[in-house]
Amino acid sequence: MMIQSNRLDECRVCHRKRVRKFLSLGKTALANNFLTREQLKRHEPVYPLEVGYCRGCRYVQLWKPVPPKAMFDRYLYVSSTSSTLSRHLTSVADAVVQKLGLTDGDLVVDIGSNDGCLLRGFKAHGVHVLGVEPARNLVGLARRAGVATYNGYFSLATAKRLRRRYGPAMAVTATNSFLHIPDLDDYLAGLDAWMAPEGVFVIEFHYLADLMKQGAFDTVYHEHVSYYSLHPLIFLFDRFGMEVMDVKRLPVHHGQLRVYVKRKTGSRPVADSVAQLLDAETRLGLGRYATYAVFARNVFHNIRKIQRTLLGLKRSGASIAGYGAPAKGNTLLNVCRIGPDVLDFIADKSRLKQGLFTPGQHIPVVPAEKILQAQPDYLLLLAWNFAEEIMQEQGEYIRRGGKFIVPVPRVRII
Image (cartoon, rainbow, N blue to C red; front, side):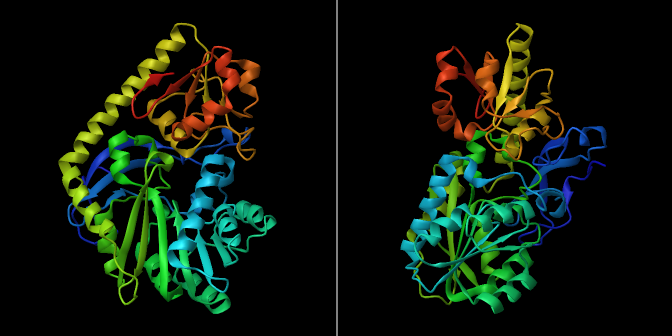
């Protein structure tokens, strides 16, 4: 049942009742829950996809989270599939080791460690590593790659148990997975229990300011409980005796933020970048509800343009397929109601997704080799944040006359 109220009972960061809805994308299937042919015959659950803004602490949050076990016990997104992302995660490890001065005896923990791609970068520096990953299928991939990984959800109880076994963590990382957490208090309590006195928490996530600028509505899906700017993070970590010591904006995924967090009692200094970004967010209007209302209007304008473009090409007799089957792509397909009557197939390099069907719209996912076999007139870039990498890989498709449709930030044909 859709939520009718325009108020949320309580903000997950400040616990005040000052959250107001600004974006409603209807009911959608879970964006990473790809289906087998047999599952197509069964009922597929859908959930409201709505976002609100807290006028108390500026936290932007999913209106009604889905229980994590419905999304993460088995997970089909694999970090190593993208060469761009793999290189980035190696650079993350290099940067953290250098900035924190990590040495051979130090422990680095990665929460939501996926296939161990980030921790492989840390291992190259000789530090001890441990992943915490709820998806059983990904844990197997990480362990086969030589990355020690605990299979389970991160919590206070988990942190206490693992600290007793492995010792305190000098660095705890969470690249994109921090967005997935509905119970922030338990998570932060777990971090506080495991992190060494001089330890640092390093997080990366799609930065709200960039998401807003791009009109990246497809980044909204049920896994992403949070859409962070720096202001609410300052508030959140302060409640647990921690503070942001440095921030860095990054180009990966068309705009991420890396945040370093330390204990207030720690000796590491706070960089000027923190105050500078807080000022920038205020100038950008991230502290005003009106900014988000304008964003929502622009989103629906672009959704209509995507629909008109694709349906117009299809009516003209053009063949269209999709490239990339990321979660964000399924938000776009479901919200725009683009199904197999428009896209003949979606090509993806991940073997875990090939042979399955997209959630909601049920478009078949095939190996990337299918592109040259079928040579569709157009490829809709659902993984548009990796457009440069994809276009380089698909040079032969381009030479044969194929064109790309980039849907965000605005629809364009290349």
